[in-house]
Image (cartoon, rainbow, N blue to C red; front, top):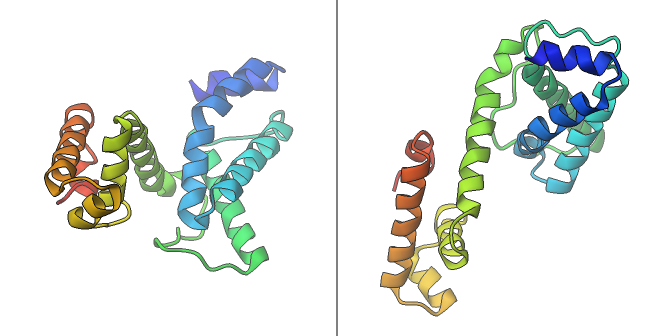
Length: 182
């Protein structure tokens, strides 16, 4: 399928580029964010990768998957950005230096895709439930503090967290072991 879109892109079909962009932009942004911890800069890097990709569309040779190729480009742009800005913001282990095998990036790509899917589901929660869940699971605030901050009972906070977990379990089972261990 990648080859079909790449061939169309080489032939000047800008619709193929739009499909590729729509498919990967959010994932590439999320991947860059893991290293930069700045959403605006992550979006800018993802956009720059697509600009470079579009400019090279006639001569680009991809030996593995398009997805791996794009993720590899983002990774290198993140490294360059950090080096140029002299920021050291890695909170997760940096990737090994690229050795010519895109398959080395697959675990990172898969993880980013799974996290993105989970966050999309979280966004579908009702507003109060989503807010409570995020405070609990992403900001690590204890239930009693959440209740106090939002002027709710502890039982309401617990119920909302339970509802969120139940919703996520029923809609997405793979990541729950990683993100929802408590």
